[in-house]
Image (tube, rainbow, N blue to C red; front, side):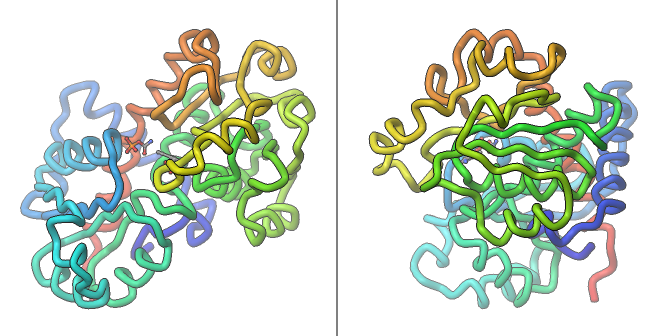
Length: 304
Ligand code: CP
Ligand code: NVA
């Protein structure tokens, strides 16, 4: 594994390895065992969009691993004034040991990896959110003991989260159910891949999707960059909410997860959110552990 650009690039074994190391790092952190595995290393973090969890967990994670992290707002970089990503990649590769980027186009992340010579980590694009879904898989495994054969149900927009959940869930042997309006389907290529590679349903019916679910997951109806579509999306997604009715369709011990930030009374009711706050905030915490695992795996490799 040279980069983390999307989950499609990873094998089941590589994902399992990331989760195992994340569990180990979490254990060590809880028990005060220092792990300065990345002493002297520097991670650059380019943000074209806002972030709380991704920024803080990557930054804190690098410090906990003995390295350092640089927050690089795209507005302050020359990239914000049109310097090509191909040049930015080659320059930053001369200074840094790794690069995390949150941006709009997946192609920009892929270009950074292609032109640079250091590991690139996707911290969210319009297409996918691999770090978040690795944290989600870690959390499901913690609560359920295993991933295989658990039924994961995502209700809402067929967005970056839906795309990564489908790929991550199917690769790890989960059954994946997606409920979203017909105009807001996940990526067509991912849907067809999922149909060929595992147990997968994509429907507009929230009751069918949530039937027998072990894990219910949702995300905002309007993602970053879609703010102008907010009102029309509110109408389109009004039936796509995790509430008591949906929980009643799922298994009795179903978990509820949300990558956050959450919009209460839109994609999830306040009651369901607060009842399942432990799972949701464990999920947020696991961003830290899983990303430290990713950083260790990528930044300890020799440069070519
Ligand atoms: N879930 C997530 O990626 O959160 P941030 O947008 O706060 O980084
Ligand atoms: N789908 C959301 C996820 C935020 C972490 C967005 O892209 O804004």
